[in-house]
Amino acid sequence: EVQLVESGGGKVQPGGSLRLSCAASGFTFSDFTMHWVRQAPGKGLEWLSYISASGDIIYYSDSVRGRFDISRDNAENSLFLQMNSLRVEDTGEYYCARDCSGCRRYWGRGTLVTVSS
Amino acid sequence: SSELTQPPSVSVSPGQTARITCSGDVLAKQYVYWYQHKAGRAPVTVIYKDIERPSEMPDRFSGSSSGTTATLTISGVQAEDEADYHCQSTDRSGITWVFGGGTRLTVL
Image (tube, rainbow over all chains, first blue to last red; front, top):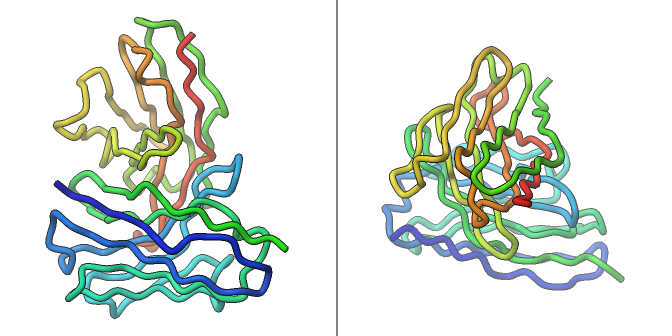
């Protein structure tokens, strides 16, 4: 069974940092590209970042480029999102998702990030 | 534009058919994916590549796409189908994801 479990969320002050993790199981992690997506309270889903299966190709949305850093450890079946210079508007539920162009995509249940003073 | 547009809400009675639309220029060239999202749970793929349904999803879920508009159809809606539904595609790069604003399906 494919499982994605996010962790690392919490409450942080503006300007602070958090490191999110996504533990993958039930599939060959190194075969799949991965994404981070978030949902602010009362808003729709917002794509944040992409990382290729090998980790050598990375993309960011304009809203997080220069502040967030996506990475992965294929040996540990884990995806990460280092978030720096956090802003109040970064508050939301953060999800990791497994990409698949020819099959269903899987998501985790999310981890909540609250940026507030 | 890379934006996708969905109606904020759709309401139907049990047993009726719900249709949720998603429109955007990118849909003319890129596939659409549909996700069902219930509070506190992981989003679940209900349709991928415009019309494909995961084997685990009930056959009352179907998808279609024509030009710049895609439609998720739920036939014979059940109470358990009440959720937010999000459409998703990719921008011209074919890599970065774009989302609609989400549609809240209410089963009356």
